[in-house]
Length: 383
Ligand SMILES: [Zn+2]
Image 1 (cartoon, protein in one colour):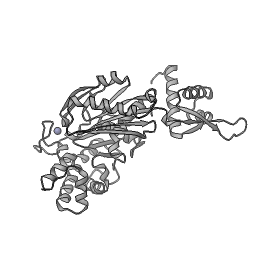
Image 2 (tube, rainbow, N blue to C red):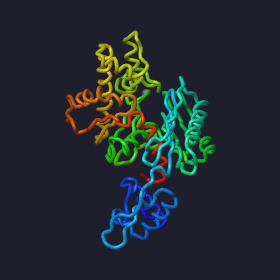
Image 3 (cartoon, helix red, strand yellow):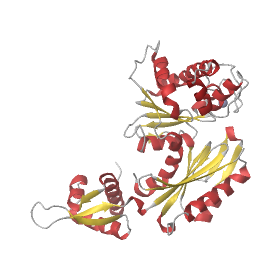
């Protein structure tokens, strides 16, 4: 049992009231009291504080059920903002969101390859651009969340290693001392899983494996609504699960890793090895598949089989409600989805179709960065 003292209870009640108002948008104090089982005087005190902080406002009178007309309390999603940063192989993207996770500003910088010395200066200038894009937001900023492609140490504020990016030991303390804002670091797949579970297709689901398919493959594992990180935050490296003994050489030094067969980089590489007219992006390859090109069709068929190998392993280990596929291929779910599901459940003694739903992220390219921007909001308000 967790024992709460009075200040914990008050903070908890405040978070519950904000969460409820953010969902319902407008309520009277009596509605809040009844829905959350908190006394009316306590609700009145907390709503008074929230009004002072600018998070809610009074929005006229509700119809009376006898007696005085009650005041409507309205949630103000633009009362606070959050910053999310996504580090990719050849870009840094920064967004400003409101409390509804709506993207208000979106800035990015593309580079051929990002080096350790560039990472922090690019991030700093993008964050400054965001802050300067709106007047008087300094006091409304809750913090900065980072979605990073590797192992992070949130206590030390470092990105320890990003194998596919050849980046190591980047400290974010400088950004913290420069902006004087709370900083949150998360691995990109965990960040994506967080966004899917709060904003995306997997909202309100307890057990979810988020498979982030980009340069490599990362996994965000949500069990009973908690992110499973492992003993020292290294869980979820599903891209380095071996699917072929003595198979393809991986950047991690091992061979046969799933991501050497099923990442978006592997898909592009497989295609380019079979054609003279090379592509740089998945989108171009998909266009050729749609137009009926044989090479594109063969490569994609083979790719789906590689994807199935790893997804089946995940299903056997975790027995999840859903597997959500995010990253580069997620916006082409019309091509991958039905083939993937039928192959996974074909010749499968343990599972039937519909035992596990295979979904593609509806947040698409935004899931990792929205997860990053959610972290400061969750820290402040718990929703
Ligand atoms: Zn590997």
